[in-house]
Length: 266
Image (cartoon, rainbow, N blue to C red; front, side):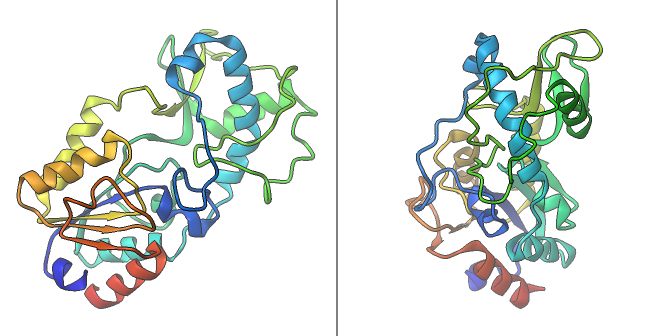
C-alpha cells in the first residue's frame, strides 16, 4: 500500500468502517446486525413513519454527537496537512473528519449537523431542533443512556415506545422537517457529485477506507478512477464491490493501516 501511494496525489473515499473505532456502528461490516434504514419514500409517505424516525433520532443523534475522531481520522488529517491527501469524500454523516481537523471534506450524504424543511428549504441547526423536541416531549428519552444503546450510523436508535412522540414542524412555514442527510432511495445533489468527481480527477490515486462499496454513490468513484487509469487501494474488513477493480486490497482495520501510512508518508 505504501509503495503504491508514495509520491501520489491521493483522493480518499471513506465509509462507515472508518468510524467503528469511534464507537459508531457499521452498516455492513462482518459484525454488523441486519439493518433496515428508513427510505426516503417511507419518510415522505407517512406521518407515522416521520414520528417514528424523529423519536428514535431524538435519542440517537446525541450518541453520534458525542463521538470523537479515532486514529484513522487523525491519520487522514495528517496526510492532508503534509500534502499527500488532496481531497476527501466521505459517505459518513458523523462529522468525525471535520472534528479531526480535516479541511477539505465533501460530505457526500450530508451530516447530522442540520435539518432542512422540505417545503420552504430553510436549513436550521440540529441542536436547535433538539431543544424544540425536548420542549415538546419533556419526558421522552430522558433516562436513555447513549452508551450501550443500539444506534445505526445515521443516528437511528433502537427506541420502540414512540406512539406519543410529538414531531416539530418548520418554525418558519410549518412544513415537514427532514435531516439534511441523503436517505436511501434519495439522490445525492448533482453539484456535490460533481465536486466529488473533481476530487478524483485532481488526484493520481484513490484510497478507499472502510467502505464495502455496496451502493453506487461510492462505487462510481472507484469505477471513475479505474476508467482513468488511476490505481485504487482499498482498506476494509470484509469483501467490497471494488475488490476486482483495485490495484491492492488490504484486509485490515482502518486505524492501524492509516496510522502506518501517515507515519511513513508524512
